[in-house]
Structures are given as C-alpha cells and as structure tokens.
Image (cartoon, rainbow, N blue to C red; front, side, top):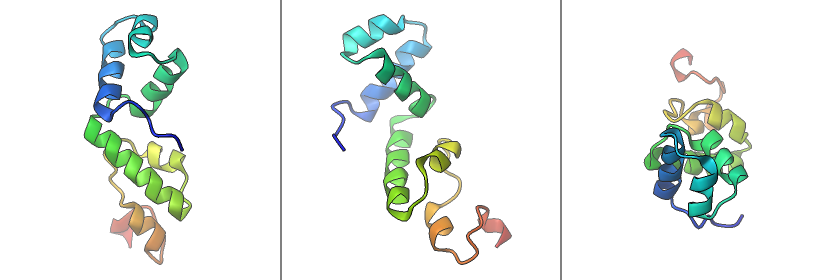
Length: 100
C-alpha cells in the first residue's frame, strides 16, 4: 500500500476546515486532493484527533493480519473500547470481555 503524503494532523485539519463551513472545492484545491479523497477521509476520520487516527490505523493493520475486517474496527468508533487481541486470542471469542 502506498504511504500517504499527508500526516494525521494534516488530515484532521483539512476535515476540520470542512466542518467549519469552508467550501469543499476550495479546501481540496488548496490541499491538492480530490473531493473523493476528502469525503473518504471525512467518512473514515470525522471527529477524530490525530492520535485516534494513528490508533485506528495500527489496530486496522493488526486486525488485517488476524483476519478481522476493517468495518468491524471502524464500527467501534474512536474510543476502541474492545481490545482486538482479546477477540482474536481469547478462547470464547466474545466481543464483551466482561461476560467471559
């Protein structure tokens, strides 16, 4: 996979500009990205801080190696309340470690 030329902080700044009401076309022109890229980032990272973005990417790469879909990780949101290692390694494989 090709590495992004934008840092998490830059992505967060671009998304925040759109949330503040700046026209998407102008944001994309200044950043040098397509509108499709902007909306993909917005869908994936809206409301996250750069540290949350980094954690999401790390867990997604971990889950990819273990066979967990990225949709399952994204559905948890930025809090990442459930430890993915628990889901992959624990014998009962339940999503709520409290019930084990």
